[in-house]
Structure formats: C-alpha cells, structure tokens
Length: 213
Ligand code: PRP
Ligand code: URA
Image 1: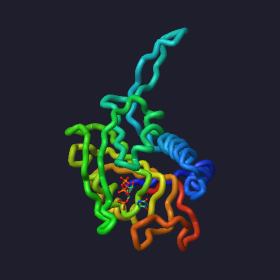
Image 2 (image 1 turned 60 degrees about the horizontal axis):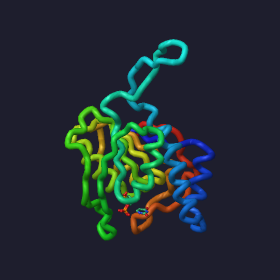
Image 3 (image 1 turned 180 degrees about the vertical axis):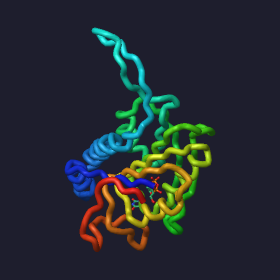
C-alpha cells in the first residue's frame, strides 16, 4: 500500500482552519471543497491516459485524454458526499457510484447499508472518498467491496487519518491490490472512542510525502 501525505503549506493552513471549532459551517464546507481539489491533483497523478489527436487552430497535434473506461469516484456516505464536488471538478468525466457505510459507535464495526455501484469494476480506477480514516474499518469495508467487484487499482482520498487506521488498512489490504491512500494530514492517535485526536504524537514530527508501506 502506498501512503501519500500531502506536503504543502496551504494544505496545512486549510486543515488548521477546518478543525478550528470557531470556523462557521459555510467556511468549513468551502475548505473541504478546496482541500479535496488540492488532494485530487495528487491522487490523480497516475490516472490512466491515452494519446489522442487534437485539432488546434493551426495544425492537428498530439494530446492526452483520460482512458476508457473512465475512472469511478465513490463517496462513502454520508460524509464523503461533501468531497464529491471537489473531486469531480478535476475529473468531470468520471462516473460516480455510492457506498453507504455506517460505523457502529459501540463496536466501531462498519455496517454497509447502501450501494449503487456497477457490478463489474474490472479495469476501472476507483477513487474512494471519505474525510475521516479513524479505525480504518469503514475504508477496509469499502476497499473489500470494490475489490470483490474486480477493481485492482484503488485510490482513497481522506482529509484526516489516524496512524492506527492506516496500519489497519495496510494489514487488511496486504498484497491483494494496488491501493493508495492520499491524506491531507496524519494525526496523533485514536482516543478510547475511536475518534482521531489531533496532534503530533511522540515523534513530534509530521509525516509528509510518499511512503511505500
Ligand atoms: C465516519 C467517517 C468514516 C468513518 C471513519 O462516518 O466519515 O466513514 O466514520 O471511521 P472508521 O475509520 O473508524 O471506520 P460515520 O460512520 O460517522 O457515518 P456518516 O458519514 O454517515 O456520519
Ligand atoms: N467520526 C468522526 O467524526 N471522527 C472520527 O475520528 C471518526 C468518526
């Protein structure tokens, strides 16, 4: 599994304002949208493309376009819906599917309650979007779901992640598929309720960049 923690001062700034409890809801939504667009730029670095011809006003030229079948963006309901516009802004030709997952707040297990996805995802690049990667249970359930339908190339875009959740996803995915997780920030740890606690952890250093786990 590949972990990509965005390394950009604007992203760090926006995450800080986002998590400020005084930030009003309209600003919060705008920041989510901006952050997703910035993360989508990184997350789509390996989007499949093909060479094509383009008629310019002067001559025909060789260009690049997104390959068929188009990628599919899958927001994990409900919170992932707030990230959809930002992703679609960068890849408007992508298809959209939905996966409804709910974390049981007692057991912290993910429960799947809805799905609107093509039965066959063979050969499709899948972008799973969800703002929080806490225990990782929801993301593992979503990854399993799309792998069972034939996907082999899955990129997860999250805003905040806990180290425990990343380790859980890594352990469960293993060598089964090419899975990347792109996040704006990795936080300190989970608390006793499985919520992400902001902070730097013992190392005192933020993790940035691309790491093969
Ligand atoms: C939140 C979040 C993730 C999940 C993360 O959703 O959007 O899907 O929890 O937790 P995990 O990594 O421990 O599984 P929630 O279950 O609260 O549903 P909601 O988006 O409908 O509020
Ligand atoms: N839901 C949240 O709002 N935060 C978490 O850390 C996990 C689930």
